[in-house]
Amino acid sequence: MLQRTLGRTGRPVSIVGLGTWQLGADWGDVDERAALEVLGTAVERGVTFFDTADVYGDGRSESLIGTFRRENPDVDVFVATKMGRRGPQDPAEFTLDNFRAWTDRSRTNLGVDTLDLVQLHCPPTPVFSNDAVYDALDTLVDEGSIAAYGVSVETADEALAAIARPGTASVQIILNAFRLKPLDRVLPAAREAGVGIIARVPLASGLLSGKYTKDTTFAADDHRTYNRDGSAFDVGETFSGVDFATGVEAARAFAAALPEGVTPAAAAIAWVAAQDGVTSVIPGARNPAQVESNTSAASLELPAGLDAKVHEIYDRYFRATVHNRW
Image (tube, rainbow, N blue to C red; front, side):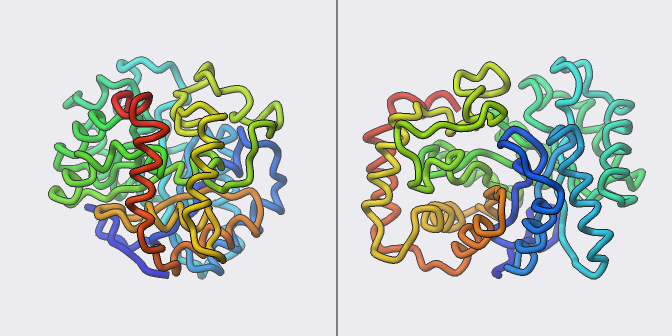
């Protein structure tokens, strides 16, 4: 699979990675053996980049990756984790002492001395402009507990604030056919600064797979059931913040624009990966079949006219309601 350098880390990662939120929690139950099969299939398909977080299953996702690494010591995978959402979402919590405690826990879960990349996990907006936060992150690098740091953001303005900092290696942001705002300013700024872009939620929580109808339901412990109004965490993480019924209609229009033999999921991921400035796209998966479908995007030639169609669908269904929010 094609590799791209992940910003200021200087490390190559696959253009399609694996998001492992599904292996921890909030997407219905995935048992340990099934989770390890997902990780193994991803590697077999050329994935060299896993993204996780210390809150995914309260560390379960990290621990599963740690187990996979122990069982496969010769596999070289770059692992990005996140920190900052295990405690109160108060800017005062983002201190060096807390950073040390959080990263120590992640190092134990993942079974490593040095974390490849730690990302601030969508913290309160003031954190992104706090000099002391970046000083603390630089200290962790100097101490050798982390090799590099980045941020995971909800808004374009948060991304731009982080990109302006010289130590920021990468920015993770929601980018998909239903969320185009990062194309305006974030990707150009990241390209100019040499900051990597990790694109999450590329399928809009599955909407862009084209498999859902307006009557589709999800398990009670699936965030697509309990977080549609943003009551658990930022609503943008669930269906990219778009109305579910509208998203189903837009997904049908997206699928209808594809040539025969091209699946909506693969086309949606390939479109994100083709955007200038994107380093890696990190769709999640709950089983090996989903991994195979997602990674097929890495070798897919983008259908002619798809980019224009994506913008047309976005303007028709979403620009008026979501473009200024994130």
